Image 1: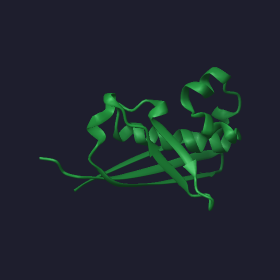
Image 2 (image 1 turned 90 degrees about the vertical axis):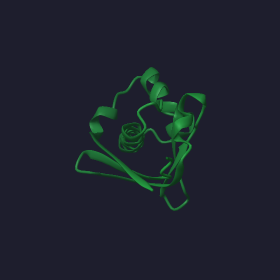
Image 3 (image 1 turned 60 degrees about the vertical axis):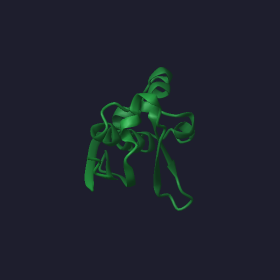
Image 4 (image 1 turned 180 degrees about the horizontal axis):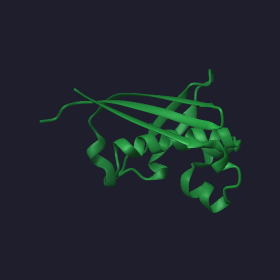
Length: 114
């Protein structure tokens, strides 16, 4: 098995005045239900953490949702352009924000295909 870890941190204030075009380019419609800067920054860091592990993913290939208890859930929308990601056994995500920053860590457990 292979463990892959991605991490990203951003200043929350970067997400205070994003244009509609920028928001739609990066975020799914479901991710824009809460447009508070700290929420957007957290989702962005989670997506960027995934892109650091799988560099062929596009913004809309990654979707962050929340369980009723508030825990983030990572959904990957795989297609013909990123089929090499099929060997995922498990994954988890953590998002936090404090002191004007948002951070996310994503961990993937991959099958070691030989």
